[in-house]
Length: 99
Image (tube, rainbow, N blue to C red; front, side):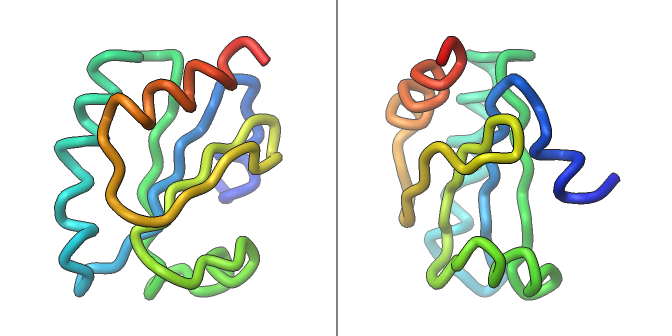
């Protein structure tokens, strides 16, 4: 499955752009799990290693990690860099669920 196929969805797709060497990125997995546990099938969560997927990172101008982008129907509808609380991510995803 290509990246475009992954983000071509009518439900929000949260993409976590990360790097193995990034300290703050290591804080994200439990936060993303909490979001997934709360929202279940209402969201798809995908992790993209910027070192292994440089073309995708460049395409979406990811300059720092972690960068989180919510896509809906192939369109980036929200983005933010840095570690975020699960409640913030959940609120952003909920905003785009019914939009």
